Length: 212
Image 1 (tube, one colour):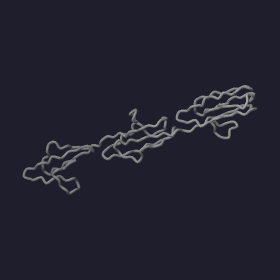
Image 2 (spheres, rainbow, N blue to C red):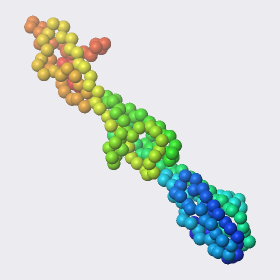
Image 3 (cartoon, rainbow, N blue to C red):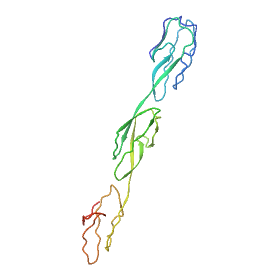
Image 4 (cartoon, rainbow, N blue to C red):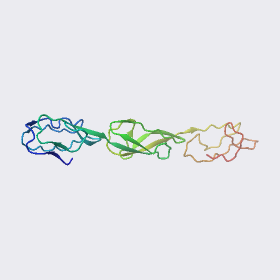
């Protein structure tokens, strides 16, 4: 706001409550002004998460940052602060997973819903703030800055069951595996028999080099 002016020093006999309502913002004290004295514009109010748009009130047709009290004015005048909630960007780093959204736009004081990413072989643990490493859940925007969230994951362990059909399992074959596992199964043995190969349950294809 550049000005709060009068057209002369002879403007009013008494003005009070000139800025009575900051409307959720920082306090703006009432102004009591005697006739013939100049009005000093107060500092603009502030409000976390909001941008000050200007004043509405007595003799104002629209919201304005500049308020002029015409010469010859008198009586009480009231002005109310107007605000616009800030838009914030939440960047989403899936850290290997997949998500339909790379970022979402949130509005201060309004609810927001974070998407759920997917990653084969992983369990999604939640979104964590990149700076603070704290869990961020759905809620109402109570922060006034852009932020980046990183997805956290845990690997899913799968069980391996061996059906040896009379053979003896080789030492060292694992009983579980996960998405990051990499190994080749040792083949079993059976006295008097030749090992033909491994087959996944429900499949007929055989291999003597079963690699995970």
